[in-house]
Length: 211
Image (cartoon, rainbow, N blue to C red; front, side):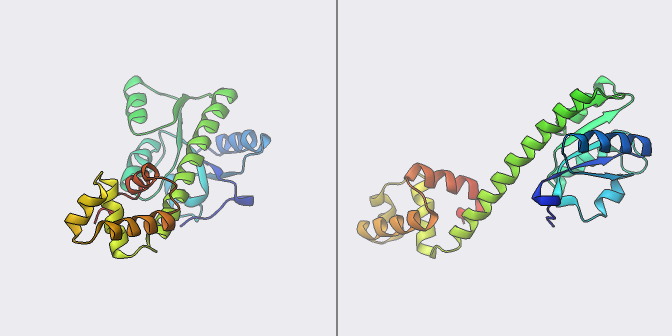
């Protein structure tokens, strides 16, 4: 689903049903070197092939069809990870609170001050970079985890649970020396420099490492 933006740089996506707003925001973002793509509705964006390339989505809270706020609130139930900045000519406290609870980076009132918008977009892009880095790290760990034998996975999980070698040996039914061997192999294959690092890896892998 991922489609890198130009030069591999995540794009700023603008969704607004007002063409003049789209053009103004596109000009602003491009003036500071940000790759920008514009859409007139959430539906147009979702039907495009640019979902994976968006580093930040700037959209109006009130849009025909799916509103900006509705789009934001559906993200946790989808496999789309986006950093969202909402803008609107009319923002009440209740709406702003609802948007922030749903994960909006910021909620800004039109006409938006350019500096405020650029700062919000930069925060959103920074958030997106962290998320992409974490996703890359998890993908790397899953690939490494796939190289472990079933016994190495079992020992790795028990080590992460805090069990000593002799306790693992008793539970699994192997010698303590064999436990040490499997633990060493797991750490080597996972490229973990220490047991605490191995524990963090198991936490990041989640259920896949606890089966």
